[in-house]
Length: 136
Length: 432
Image (cartoon, rainbow over all chains, first blue to last red; front, side):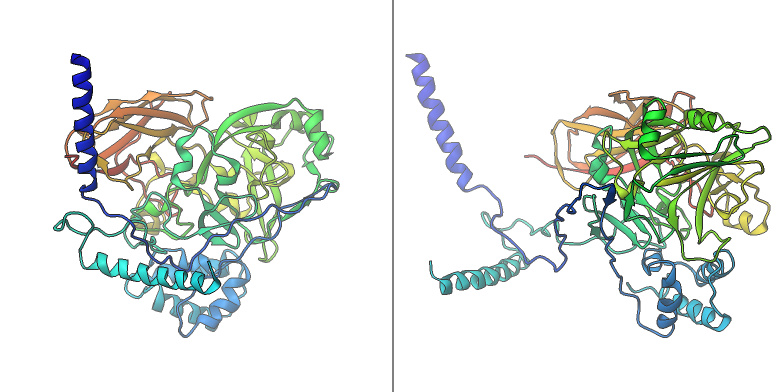
């Protein structure tokens, strides 16, 4: 008999607790509009049974370079060997560091960039990608 | 349900979203009034770059991107391809192939390989030059496997102060795999290394658009023939029991256990025995570290020109807390299981210690599955934070050689060898 009393008491207590749950402090049902960025699922590449193992093409994710004088020179020279993400990936660097980078590309890596074009590129990077000037 | 009604539903839905946002902005919540509104989580994308201070995030902060045979990874650059592995993949001993980080030096990288044509050339100062097809490579020599960590020399480069130019990796330019292939030594013996040979050079299928003779045209790395690591090197044709993803070096790559990834040539096509030291750009000028303790120096000393350099080699001991990662508030009294990994290029992990009070006291963690001295070693430790607060967790590992992680960073112009003790803030909230 005693067990049954306990049982009933427990049910009452649990019911009260459950009801209390309805008044609990919580937020619900809030959604927001997602941004435009989407990562699509990719289907596997159609495979043939010959000896060619083909992974398909590698996508380009072209970044937005700062607008300004010298941007064309960057696009026409730097981008021959590498994506402009090599610029946008960097932390803001001092103007001298950008000058060193451009000269490294010319002297060490053999990029054939004429002096005046190189100067424009250095000027551009210094105007948009230093701690003082970098916006995005 | 009619078409118009469906359209109405969608428009209403979007309006409701706007209204919910406004409600939130006004600081009202369901249930009892008076509680402060919180920013909805997950709505603030990480910035595209960090600096000039140190990158405060575990990985590089940029966007995710999808590449062939790959899960969405963190994009550093798209041409040549550099992709970083997100943190949660490091909860396990082995890093899955689709999540394994990617780093190429030159823009013309293989998309497809025809195994009818592909050959591994063993050439140079040898008695019998070899031209091995994929089946020959796999059947002519004994198959062996090793678990080994592949870590970019510049992993965690974005931690350096002052920042240096280069791939701005967080901690995710590393991975551990079970590599299966054949011993480099067996291949060299089959070809017969001539006396007077000093180095063996490796080259893959990647090429650049720079002029001939420059590092922007070809990527090659060499190891001394007297280096004991030669005896441990593999030419691997399988990664975690699968063919290598194209971006990780299909059909075969060099495995140099304990060494930084710069030597692990991908899509290997040439093994060249040299009778004079390799003076190509990637050995003579790049991937060099100051010949100082821990390879650290200062910008001033570099400018002065007094700093002698040596080629980068073995990876210093490192350890990481993977979970919890600080993105979730933990209720006080919650029994947490701290989990992470440790590894060292100098041999196995002997000890991992964890501090929950910013390094004042340390507790030894439990070391888990031992997959070999060059593998990730997972560790765990139970910890129940009793009261609300901001806890500074720190983790440090000691390897079999007795090397321990220091609490100071390094600086060198290449941004290499970072192995400072890692820290993670965990926010514990009231639970009642």
